[in-house]
Amino acid sequence: MNKILFISVITVVMIVSVYFIPYYSLSVDRLKETYYVGESITFTGKQTGCNLSCDYHEISIFDENKTTVWSSTIVSDGQPPWIIPRMFWNNENMVGTSEDGPIVDSPGEYTVRYETKTSSVEKKFTVMPPLTDGPKNSIISEGIPLTLYVSNQSFIHYTIDITVVLDDKTVVSDTFDVEGQHSFHPFYLELGKGRHIIHVESDNGVSLTREFEIDKETWIVVSYWYYEEDEPFFNFDIHDKPVGFL
Image 1 (tube, rainbow, N blue to C red):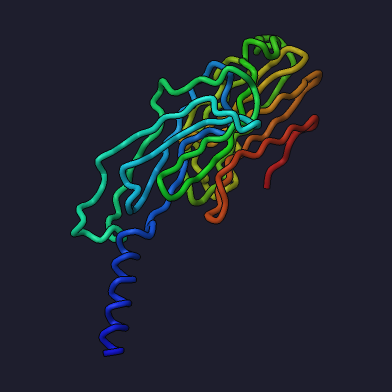
Image 2: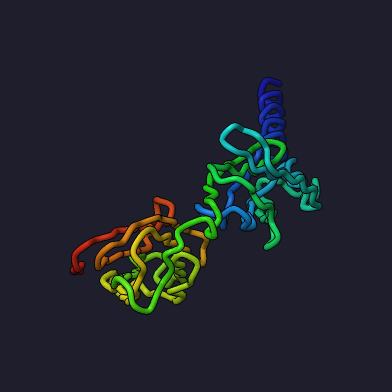
């Protein structure tokens, strides 16, 4: 009798675990680190796996004071049939914003929150002032020499599309190969004296924005890095002397 009771209890626990415990993961993907006022905030919320929360998704954006500036609730029909254990339902629910996503009106630090009935995940991003309010020292034909080096340093993402916008002009848009991790591609520019904004972005949503000043010949190195245990990122270095690479 005790054996039958034990088996019955184990069976009930297994059924509850299979159907009710959340066997899934949530992530926020393709969210850039930096946006500008007036730019659409685009990203994707991904749910892999399933349980009772398969059909409900809420996405919100809130500021540093926890004030919600945008939210959206989505009800989908992705719920698996009851006869299929949810822990084996390895579907992907993709929800998020399109190219016409929400626009944040004020600069600052913000957070995207993606949640289901039983779990949630958050990811931070920054909204910068519009470029039209930034430096006016645009690229000119006869100015201070700037050598910009761009490099892919990731053996995992061995090719990556990188775009570089200097002030409001795209100066680099190309595919970069890691090539043994020793390739630094130079781009020769001339700038007006004063402050400038450089914005770098990859095709997988990684971005970096920096302000810098120039009053003499300058060398800048922008490199893309990604290790399997970390998030991908851009590194930015600025020098007032020529740069050497090994």
